[in-house]
Structures are given as structure tokens and as C-alpha cells.
Length: 413
Image 1 (tube, rainbow, N blue to C red):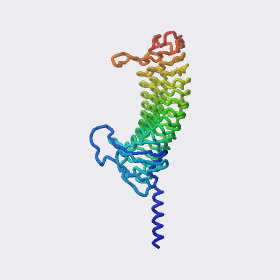
Image 2: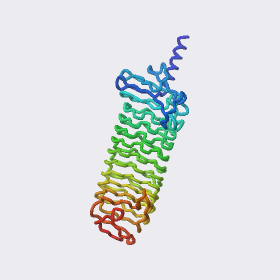
Image 3: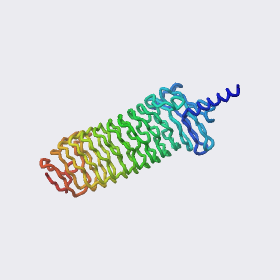
Image 4: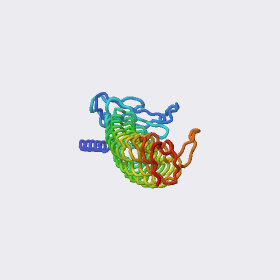
């Protein structure tokens, strides 16, 4: 009878162990190592208190025994295939807006299991408990080859910000099932992950301020962007999302018809392999909504239609700057300019030889560091030496880099 009870207890404990989805590090080469360190976000010299450091335990024997993970101490995985399981009870979050804790690594390590075991000890929770929860968790872990599971469906402000930034060995992103986003939740999450070849699906349809800002910036191995189904945008939501993704050859569809401040600002900045822009159906502009969107996209041969007749401050500023393969500008039907709306819009488009506009006056001038600038400041500077400028009869004939390029034929209709 006692033997049966012991067997049942063993089976129950084994079942409970396997039920947990612990964050797990597996050595992909011998003598790999990991540790954690805690520091203040504001880089002050105030000493850390014991309560500032999150509760983290690790096991090197499959969960039979657990030890506290000391701060700023390397735990060695001696042989290839050795594993470390991690858990913690941190119901208010692993990091916060003042103090954050991050892993550091040596060798080559693949992560698996749920990152949420650092929150609830089991990896079962599906809600991020606090702001900045996993801020910079694996930043600069160039040894990390595989990301853990991120199962949370409800996010918090800056919760994954910079999480895998500079993880240069990471080739695939984890699934991101969340549909309830928060401000800055994915900001710079994979910044400079230069080996990242595949982006995760992003199912959310309602954006938050800066939610995807710089998410994949400098991911130079990324060739295709994920679908972006959102129709409700937010300020800076896609700002610099794919900036400097030099191998990105295809842009996602952008179905939103209602824009917000700088929502697409620098989204594809210096995506030098991008040949075709997505359709941009919105007709009501917002401040800086498309500013520098395709700046430096020197393979872009065709611009999208820009149907809006009501402009906003700097809405198209620098939008196609340096697009050296562009030969024809989209028609610009707006009859009245807005402050800085076309500033540097086609500057450096050396093959551009035709443009048709609808505005009837050259707008206003403004002060910029003590110098006067116009709404069309150097907008057609360094374009083709010969071209055609089509405009309304009422538009005054004025030449120069801030107006109509010298040497271009002017056709008034």
C-alpha cells in the first residue's frame, strides 16, 4: 500500500512538473553560459535594493532542485545539450519603468518554453502584468539563436521594447498572438537583428502610439514584411518600422484610410531593395503622416497615387527623397499647400522628369534656425536637368530649387 502511495505521489509530481512551461535555455555548444543583471533605466548611481531585483530561480536537473539565480553571475552549461529551466514569482512584472533586468550570455544558447514562467512560476499567464515588463530582456544577447514563447494576448506599455535588440544570431521571431496592444509595446523589439529572416504575424487591427515603431529597423536579412491588417492607426504606430531593412523587397498592404500623426513616418527609410510601394488610399492627411516614408529607397521605380486634396503640416516632407530610380512623380491634386507639406519631397530624385500639381500659389515662408524656408523647400532639388512641370494657370512662374527646376518646360492647364 505504501509503495502504491509513493508511486502515485511520484506520478503527480512528475505530471505537475511537465504541466509547467518553464523558460528553458539549451546549450548549442559546450561551455555556454547565462546570467542576469539589474540596472536603473535612468542610469543613476543610486544603489539597488534587494527588492529591486526580481525573484528568479533556475534548475540544471530538469526541475528536481531549484536555486536562486544570483545577480550578475554566470551559470555555466558545460556540455552541448545541457539545459537550464527558469522560473520566478513576479506578479507585478519582471522589470518596470525605473529598473530593468536583462539576461547576458556566452557561447550559443537556444531559448524555449514560455517567458511568462518568470512571472507566475509556471508559464501559464496570458497577460503582461505591468509596464516595461520585459524591457531589454535579451538585448545584445548575440549568443541567443532561438527566442522563447511570448504567449501573452494582452500587452502593456513598452512591455517588449528592445527585448531582442542586437540579437544578431536570431534568425526567426517568436509568434506574437496579442491583439490588444499598448503604447510602444513592440518598439525596437528586433532592432539590429541582422540575421532575422522571417517576421512574425501581426494580427492586431487597432494600433497604439508607437506600438510597432522601429520594430525591425536594421534587420538587414529580412526580405518580406508581415501583413499589416490594421485599419485604425495611432500616432507614430509604424514609424521607422522597417528602416534600413536593405533586403526588404516587398512592402505590405496598408489598407488604413484614416491616418494619424507620423503614422508612416520613415517606415521604409533606406529600404534599398524595395521596388514597389504599397497603395496609399487615405485622402485626409495628418501632420507628418508620410514624412520620409520612402527616403533613400533608390530601387523604387514607381510611386503610389496620392489622392488627397487636403494637406497637413509636413505630410509629404521628404517622402521620396533620394529615390534615384523614380522617373515620374505621382499627381499632386491639392489646390492649397500646408506648412512644409512638400519640403524635400523629391530632393535627389535624379531621374525625375515630370510632375503635375494642383496648387495655385507657393504657400508661405517660415523661420528655421534664423533662415527663411518655404513649404516647397528644395522639393525638386537635384532632379533630372530637363523635365516637364504641369500646373494651373494661376500658379506664378518661379524657378529655382524651391520652385520649378531651371531648364524644365512649364505647361499650364
